[in-house]
Length: 382
Ligand SMILES: Cc1ncc(COP(=O)(O)O)c(C=O)c1O
Image (cartoon, rainbow, N blue to C red; front, top):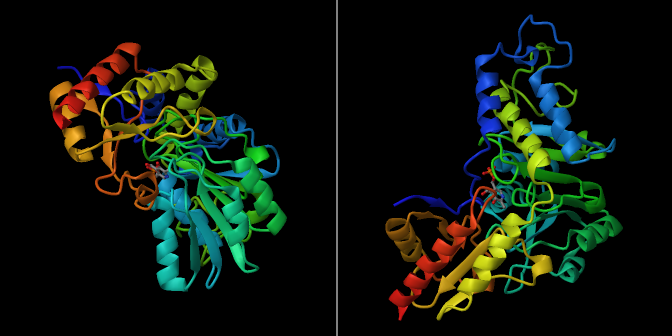
């Protein structure tokens, strides 16, 4: 039995050949000057190059800058804990991942912040009007995921950003499921910060990610980690220079070389590729006909079809996922998918969902085999 990998929302697999090559090359080359040596820095080393490629990819312009991190979780911890202060009021949503909810809960426990959690629709969509209604004079920030990792729902960031701007609150976006998968029009979002991870839609290695941050927010953001930056060793806390203020310790330069290659691969091969959305739509449409099975998705405009989540009446989601892997070699995700609050709204509170997420290397055959396998599971339920 072969393996059919349908878990690209967790991490993309396989990676393009070029990503492995770039990562290995970096690992085998003399470490760049930024890695603290007497090598002369002529401004062309690979971390610098990766920074330029990624900034260009996101079309940052001159109002924003890029911070490298180890991934979405570190980025969210940095931006949330670095900008929200004691007794602030923040708004978030029931669709969020624990990488958002847990730093907020920690701030609530330790710093007395107040959190308002907006409800979501049966597809995980956040009504911008509910944000408007929840804003108070002391509200500091709104934190929301671009695309739900459970339902694939794409939030209305355009309307949301207008509301945030009108009310002078920071808009912090968890773009871990958006980046590389759906259009990230950073300037149109008008947000204070957009967090991305390297190992999902951007096709890079794990341990890479970052924050696109508005330049005007940099001074008011505290670093998450403290340590060496290779110069100004006499400073007791941190250096004010950007990005050194936020990027301490030895950088994951092989990872960022790989991420740069992943982004180049996306640009070379498939920026306008509709293969993943088409496969996801085909899968969702075919299985939604099956008895007892419910696909959780909104209308196609507000849905990224690279995430197809479903439940089957009378069956536990872990049981379904176990059957798919043991009997058919299908790798997917099941349960609450690290987003504990959404399930009450989308009707999957008992055992979460089964989530299939096709990627750029899947084929129509993989999708057809998955449809047949799920048909077999539905027969078990009746
Ligand atoms: C919506 C969302 N936010 C944050 C994360 C965390 O990202 P990372 O794995 O890069 O730490 C994930 C990853 O599963 C995610 O899906």
